[in-house]
Length: 254
Image (cartoon, rainbow, N blue to C red; front, side, top):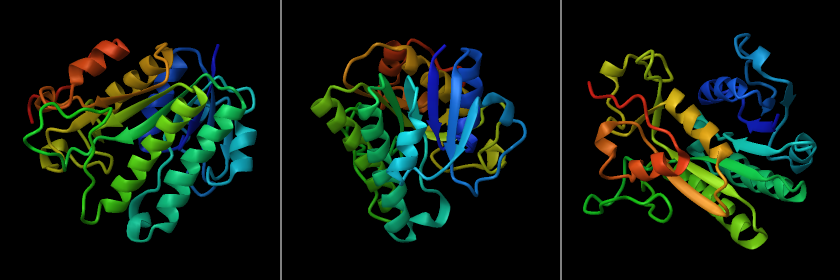
């Protein structure tokens, strides 16, 4: 039984991942901020739930005790991107803290949840490669894109410098393909944002579980996008082959 630390463990995306990992009999340690509400539906899945801030290295270091692998989901949300303070504290410093603590505790693997910038990419580029290509938005999404990119670079540098192992999952826009709703509960028929770049959160959970089982050394990055329109642009088949699964929800109706 592996012990897996999950940051951002009380978020909407984390719920499906936690349920999937528990099916594999993992021992789960969740970390999230003190003010994030706890749903009673998710409580039974945790062996330990820690209320803390990943921007605090000492808190992260204590949470890493006895951990075999990390799934790093924590990210600044909502209106946090009006200034750089919280995005850099959570996304950048927090990610550094996770990798540095994992290095010190000789943790075998860190899964980093990143973002596929499907709203901005060079339209003449086929395919768009998860390992190298990135073009940040120049508008209101810039701080989000920039700090997610810095997360990836932190992961890459720890792998290259210290011989760590990390798999970066560049998720598309995460929705619930089973319930056909987005995170806010809106029906997918009414959602236009990133249509063609969606991924069902249950497929993302499977990708995460498969990534934990792979023995890929060093730094590896993969696009995780279920929508059928993405297959010829984002090396989706490469993701399926490398992680050993197939997307179940392809949103053919959209």
